[in-house]
Image 1 (cartoon, rainbow, N blue to C red):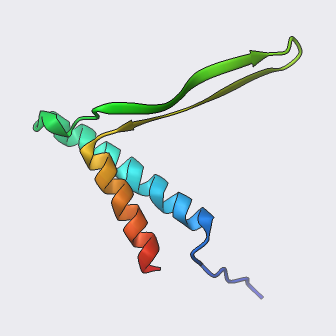
Image 2: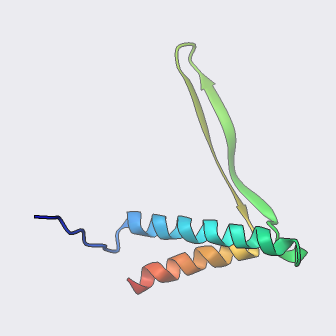
Length: 85
């Protein structure tokens, strides 16, 4: 018998919806920014890539997010979609 998966309001669902909303908003913002310059990304937040070299192991850490008005709207839409589940 096939398994059915129940989609719930877990943290993974929220993360996926926020990522999808952010990516969609960012892509739309890039397209519209050529016509409406105020919609381009205006700030970058996060941790710049840092490398830890242990001679036998090299680890890189970093996370940055470029935020603009349409990206923020996409994140908000992802959160609202999560709330409607």
